[in-house]
Length: 220
Image (cartoon, rainbow, N blue to C red; front, side, top):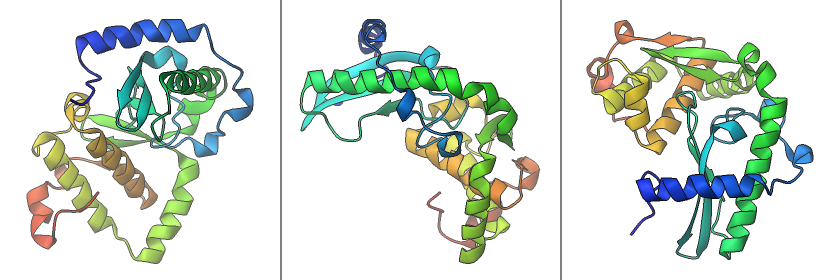
């Protein structure tokens, strides 16, 4: 049976383990990411120690996982991060969690002071998603080389709205209810849209039915 992060007993155990591991943090100042690497799918500055709700350590096929669960994050920022591959033992998973928590403590000290002034925000219906401006020039150049158009990205935005909210305006609540993969795609497509010069998307820009006849459902 798969591990359920959202079950009440697992959340209680994760919160208790978090308090225990907070007393075992290590110096991670040399390993903290630079602001230019702060992408939603890799290392968000919102992954701070004060936003960690619990540490889930559990056995899986091939070893042990250690996942940090976050709360009160902006839409589009993953709420779970963990080891890339199963650890060989529970103790190794705990050590992995301690390293992640230590990085969260460093991010809290170093990155958030400038985050709100640096970041740009993509407005999608009733939500705003953070976009790192340092990321945009490289994306824009790659998209231009591939011949990607704003019309295509509008279709993808409309498709994601259709998946997330059934063509109703997107809200934080229905984004939170979407799958982690869909939330990640939403963040990526909003980055692509901003790279092409678009800063918002609303019902006035179209719904999925306006774009559905133009081709197969997009991957993003």
